[in-house]
Image (cartoon, rainbow, N blue to C red; front, side):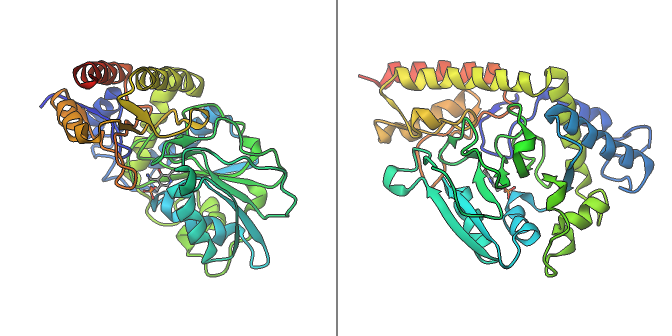
Length: 360
Ligand code: PMP
């Protein structure tokens, strides 16, 4: 079968060049006579790759020297526990901005470990369509947590939610590498890899050094940032293949011009889809225009009975996995870094045809 355009929210489409490199490397990686899946993570080839991967991420995101970078197993969901276990001391309180499903999950999990206060919400009452305004925060939260891009409802912060000295902890699972960041504004950033950085199984954690060293005694060692930082994320056998794919993705991002180029591509791709959504009344966007995600663009059809027809016709054109999340329904194109402009153009052409066919 011909390759399709995969609009899945994750695991997501990878650039062709990355897949071809994996194919080339598969039987003999780096002259080892083995695949990367078969080499020891403690050997010279893998250690060199791990170091190069970290250095490249540091270069691409301009991560200052007083931040440590970890490559951890367990997905972003494990970080919902790891964050409070590592940095929320028993007497502290953490503030959470609950703007969608993922930040809600994170706040509920954190509340099982310590004191959590929901500072602001995008509620069901407004259909999770707007991001909350946050006034001045006077409380001394240990950290303030938010999700940069809520993947399900397609809400994204376009600037930092607040200017504060409180360490910001940010889940960037669906947006890391899609724009330059001022890392110095954050205490912790984490993102699992299967959307913008390759394959499921590995999660990047970027943490300011002064937040290390305070994990609770009960923290499982693999989740302990301090122990993992001391062991260069090799406290146990790491997800080696996912780590290698992550490195290939970073090399691909670098070859494209880095995160500035990623931002330009992301903005251009999103603009094409939103222009089309806005042009045809058949398409009803979910997120308010002030908070629209540049990576996930959920919308409904004004004639909901046409949804299955839309999905079926899209699939016939090689436009796959456009079905919206079960909590929201409708259609949701997810357009991460690996989706080429050609895929977006094909989607938009299809949406135009479909709207012309069914708008009357
Ligand atoms: N946070 C966000 C914003 C997500 O989109 C997801 C997954 N879709 C998660 C967390 C959970 O990630 P994982 O499956 O890697 O645990």
